Image 1 (cartoon, rainbow, N blue to C red):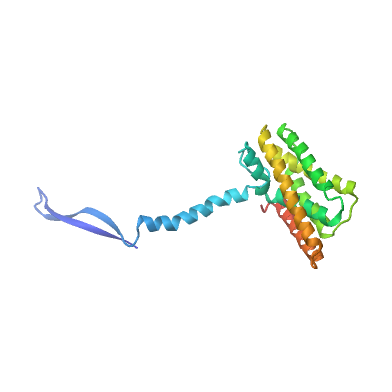
Image 2: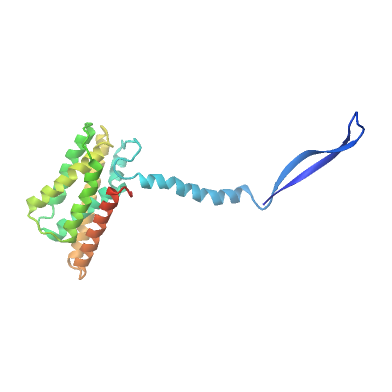
Length: 231
């Protein structure tokens, strides 16, 4: 609570000869509040508010026009978007759990991702890219949840189609930054390796089927949320 101290002074009016009281000062008195305590209470809130926009705009097409121009930025970029991260992880998980030629789908994804990124870097606009990227999470989520056993070529074609739109989305944010593009490809390979490790870890687990269904369901829900504009 803020109180005020008021200082009054007496003076005699030169014509009326009356003594009048007038307000000279009104000084606010703030008790029990110091600058240090105010900083401690405000700073965490400001930090949290500052983080909200970056969390909300980390995914495709929402970097407010700031292009990722360096190798490190390109390396980090695929990890910052939930759509890209989930898709790449699930491609590795599906490959490990459902095909002996585990390298075909990840290699297909990384190769076509590079092609799509080059298309995006050229300035070509692909309509509804964000919606197609979000839809890819539904597709790969179903593949993992149902443990779909596909021919290597068929699986590679499906994965390649998804990768192209992911690449276009990345490339539009990496305009003519080939160092960032190389970082992105390396990050993609690392995420695929992580997905393969998870998939092979689940192969010998008793709860392999429930785990695959949960992972696939989560991916599909994220896809639906992205389509609905939740992220």
